[in-house]
Image (cartoon, rainbow, N blue to C red; front, side):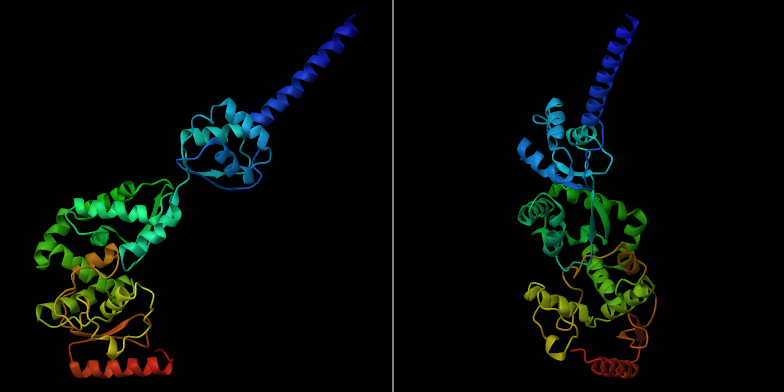
Length: 341
């Protein structure tokens, strides 16, 4: 009798262990076949969710069963979700239901115009570029501007994190807040002391950024030089403004490696060889250092600068037209020696 009871007990415990293990594996065991990111759009249905997670899991039927048991077929949040090895169905389902997305990194570079930037950014968002453009155009109008291009000054070169489901207004809000935080009372005081409008500061900062190649150590010197030219009523004669003028006309599809004399007459309000004064807007998205360089421009007497072939990426500065002519010839000779056209 005791032996029979023992056998029955072992069978019960064995069955309990078997079904318990199956239950654990189904709900909590590792069901991720490979790491990856699953995209679930706002308008997805349950079948689309199953299709999206399919390439990353081992047991699709188990995932579906747990998902239905936890009402994922009725309630879920769109997003970009990171599936990692070792995760079970319960964790995966809870992650999607809670909307615990993985952020995307966005690099905002020195884009020539907002539409270039939007095209790059929207490759990592659910919405297409047209939707982003339309919404940012509307935001610009609400701020009293003409279109999204006038929002360029709100952006700084840097790396930012956003969710795949970010809306254009959510996206812009981050930069609007950053812009307002940047303009501290100290910077506003320097802005007033500069004698420039804020738009002129950003325009000049974009020239400083392009001329310096983003190198911080020359920015204040370059800013001082251009402030000298501007205050003397001289044309700024900045090559990057010519390149920008040409790029605007060709929709940034014609790379310019070398500014030639034929380019200097390009008709554009941004061409500082053809027009006196500071351009009507920035020629690129800038970084904070270039704006600060304008606000803290070096007090020098330079009015000429020329790329230094002996120090790639740096310049020779002078107040002498004769010395500048020598520097310019040396640079042109170097370009010719490298067959850069």
